[in-house]
Length: 234
Image 1 (cartoon, rainbow, N blue to C red):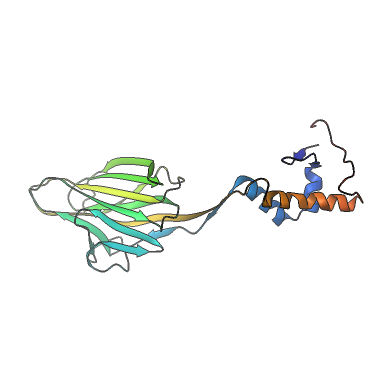
Image 2: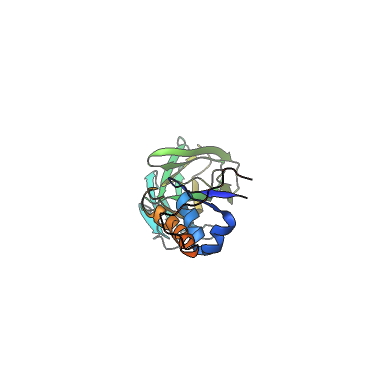
């Protein structure tokens, strides 16, 4: 017989008995309070569909704000996956140029799934960092080989980690032939809300007390009556 022991209590109830007097919805609530509840909203894809063509400063979509941190970011409606997308351009003969954007969700937590990267004639070196409360939670980097003008999806290997800030940095390499546009599109993110666990001596005990009171009532016992406790698990 499996037993469930309550904190700071001398009651021991069988799991079968507990389920018989507690509706499923209340049982789920109890487990949620014990373990903490993560409520996940639907995933969002930031496509820049409503962004104004021209210089990018900040842009908000699906509750997420994309901010240009460094580099000459601009919104282009002449290309994308599909158009529009955001890009920055490096002129021929100049040194490599790194440009960075930041994605936030009003200081709320979220997860990051993937992003589509683009370059016209060069590979795409990238660094992607997710932070929570100003502390880096994950950071990964790599180089997408020359896409020959196509987009390449980069998937986050840490997509289950909660963050409140995402930084994406791309480096436009030096080329002598021509001006090179580099950019990104379709950032997939999922907003997360977390329900905190209450203190053990507050609402949790009120909920846990409900099945105990019900049990006492059904057995015609008063709160001062003696309740038999099993000494061991079997």
